[in-house]
Image 1 (cartoon, rainbow, N blue to C red):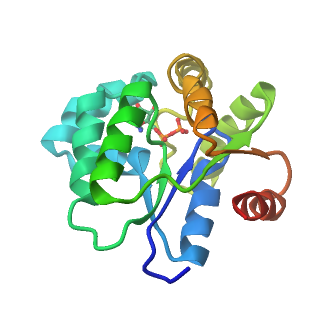
Image 2: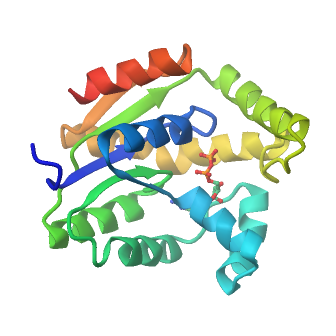
Length: 197
Ligand code: ADP
């Protein structure tokens, strides 16, 4: 496969599963662009843009930003890409987003390549998120305002209701690659690379 060939990887998994970290490494090593909708939205919040002001209370509550906003954002991101070599982290999160993404990718002639699913038991997830908040504070950085136990539980609930159905969506299309997300960062990364073949 040449460097310019299209490649579309979608990371699925609950909040705290480690999608962001693993997606970042895969992007670096495979020459892909990581598109993290959480990072994009947080950037708007910190810059105080109109969008940022609109979505801030939604992020703080651990709820989902409306589909139309996310779909427009992703459309803009993909427009003008010469070859589509991307990793999605945190998108799609609903069936409507997944269907919209399929249409966009069809227009671009860049179908989904694979969907790694990071599997981590529920009881470990909240622990990881709360620890992430604690570590940020120890480094003297501002913790994510949604990395509190209460909001993390809400995010998990939202994941179960709105995002988990995508496991069947991509499973039915033969794209799903379940990966055990428990272990060191290197171990999990190795499993992801193996699962992507
Ligand atoms: P996590 O996976 O740890 O919950 P993210 O950084 O992916 O964190 O997302 C943080 C927040 O940003 C979500 O709780 C939600 O409010 C918003 N968000 C991110 N991506 C989407 C999306 N695709 N659709 C709706 N809301 C989103």
